[in-house]
Image (tube, rainbow, N blue to C red):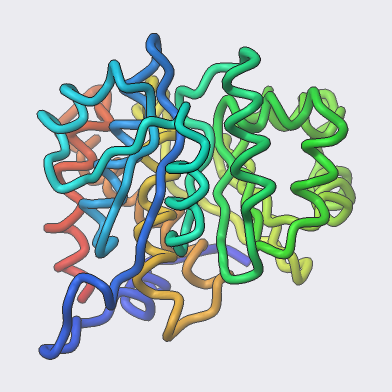
Length: 281
């Protein structure tokens, strides 16, 4: 199925007049080691800008000043505090796990804490470093595969190669779908003409986008938009449609910015999210 802008007018609806922040979901972003704090900050900013009611960022404490400077709307948790992290997971609706997390022993422990604490009411978006960690650890892959939560992987082609063991030249639609079914998860395979493999075996395809999106942080921004869309729209729409809408929206905003920009910076894309959402309300 080819995704079109019709999905945006279907999903993005006016907010009820009688509303408060609790009506639009809680997102927890987990990632950002001392070297890659920008990744989790962009994911967090994208969740806030796309309309999540409450967003908490679990990250290295070294990122706190930058986080509060760039996204003062977000709350902070030290991700090395396992009790605080577990409590934050318990109170979240959507978890974004992995942007800028790294793959050292401490990062592996954080992934373990997250996957262990997932419940059926959660949606967990597994991105970036967390995909690599899970691909290298049989126990963690089993935790994710057997989780009662809705799991969404967002790999680019090399990350998909690590997770699926399908070489990039051999990543056909049929071979990827077989592994996606085994993983018991939705897979958003990021590439030119991104493919979305849904759990009900429906495959959605994106036919917009271009090389102006090939810059660091673009995937982190997509993860954040996914989190924001799922958190606020899941009461009135099915998950497949929300995922399709978030993926299309992310690329649509980039495409609009590319009309006047050679490269689209993720931070610029994030700044345009609320205004573009308003167009489709």
